[in-house]
Amino acid sequence: MWSRRLNRFKCLSTSVATNVKNNMGWWDHVLLAPKDPITSVTEAFLSDQSPFKLNLGVGAYRDDKGKPVILECVRRAAEKISCCEILESTKATTKSKFVQDCVKLAYGNHSNVVGEGRFAGVPALSGTGACRLFAEFQKRFYPDSQMFLPMPTWSNHHDIWRDSQVCTRTYRYYDPNSKGLQFQALMNDIKNAPGRSFFLLHPCAHNPTGVDPNYEQWKEISHIFKIKNHFPFFDMAYQGIASGDLERDATAIRIFLEDGHLLGCAQSFSKSMGLYGHRVGCVSIVSRDEKQATAIKSQLQQIVRAMYSSSPVHGPLLVSTILNDADLKALWEEEVKFMVDRLIRMRITLRRTLEELNSSASWEHITKQVGMFYFSGLSPEEVHQLQRDFHIYMTIDGRIRVRRNGCKIGSLREYLPHLVSKQNWRVIFPLHVALRTPPRLIKNEEVYVSICSI
Ligand SMILES: Cc1ncc(COP(=O)(O)O)c(C=O)c1O
Image (cartoon, rainbow, N blue to C red; front, side, top):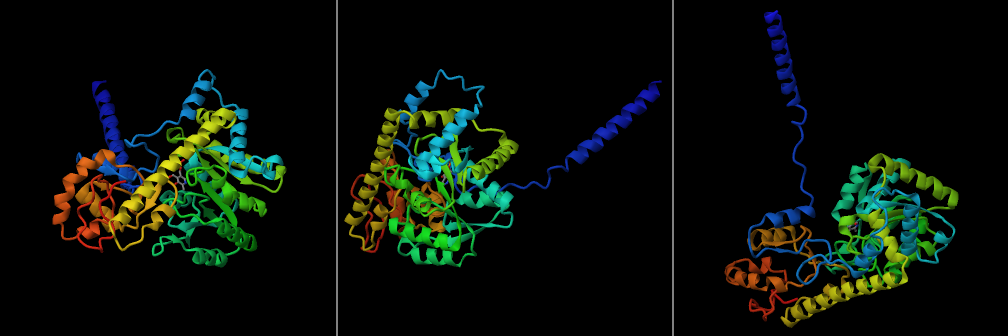
């Protein structure tokens, strides 16, 4: 009896041991994923122990102290909905109201598309989720299609379409020499793409360059899209943040609508309402008629259902509350304008300060670029060097969030002796980090950027 039990125990322990051994093989082939080029900047910044570190990589609006800003309109909307029973609510009406509000904002209050119900939309997990839903939709109905992305673009665009198994190609957009739009090259690339291609367009405050086509150029782009029968997908993460005017920032979309395009649109409220943590966004597709819109919506809903069932309601409710209350909407518009005016003032100061250094370079592009970022033109090596030697962080493409650096003034002074002693400080210093005192590091006219006050 005892020996039988012992044998059974031995068998059991051998099979457990074998299982443990087998299990050890389950995930052995999983290697560390490559770091995300944007989130890794913040990770690296946080693990830097230097008291002088400076993060210019964050892709969100911040106040003078580098802190996130909660808009007053959002505070008031939150109070207004605080008694709503939202925790259990997944009401379809809340969601369709939110989508209706979003499309009005993007397509215009009096747009035919809205009036005729010719759009299909669903709430999305912010701008990223909206792009991802569209990419999944594209794959489902145009499995062999590709997505043309501007060069450069927000790095996650490449990952989103790659993970949705849609091939990506690029079209020329930014000219590093002129630090502006490569308009003719862009038009050629649109012309030379196979007919009925999908193109991603940034309607305003292009990330990372801050360079947008002007009105006439958008008209020409829309025209060539018509001729080539391309599909425009607008990723609008910064409505209001380019000009301070929500309507004006939707000009590109309105031009395309006037020209009769069927288009797609991703919207995000992360930046314009400071709702980054709520992940509030919307994806919508303009359709031929209402019947087609219903079909498209049902497919988008099916994609959502299998991915995460349904979206949270609190964020969309906040947004709808603001958009449907005349006072809150006006307050929001004022707050957006304030943010943008402040960004513009900082750009002007930065440009003026650099020009006062008598540098031979032109700094016009600083004030020509729009939005939250200044695309500095620093090379990846220079970005690495700034990070390694001076604890200054930004994305690898040299994108810098326009900011006041008042709180860092003391720290940068600490670096001056170090910088002067560097053989290659002219390379390291095409960055205008903050110092309120007049810059003393200017050695000769050729120093095209130096330390300055913003
Ligand atoms: C062009 C563009 N699209 C989409 C997003 C994603 O926005 P969200 O944070 O709302 O997902 C960003 C954010 O940086 C962006 O710059």
